[in-house]
Length: 119
Image 1 (cartoon, rainbow, N blue to C red):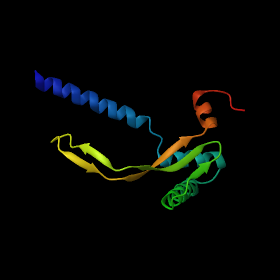
Image 2: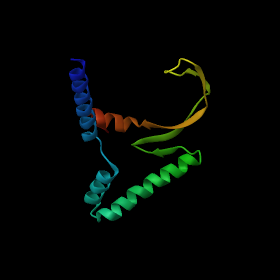
Image 3: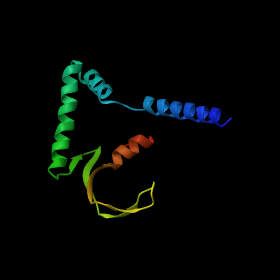
């Protein structure tokens, strides 16, 4: 009985993962949309998308904030070092300080996503 429950749970988890993957807009799809909108070959659009992403990455590596007016800002966030617990053993562990990239959507982007009219 428990084996069939495990199989059902695995099927449900697999189906949920597949559904999540369907809702993902990938880099190649972005390049295809850009190519269509500006009327260039897909290879050129892919190069342009890659160049933009590389430029954003380079600026973030250098510690710069990247602001795209009307879209949002990519910023570097800093997390302090702290203490935590290993979930398997319960032993206390040290969590080192870390940097992470955060995205703050602009009000205009939030309003567009929410379906509100943007002035």
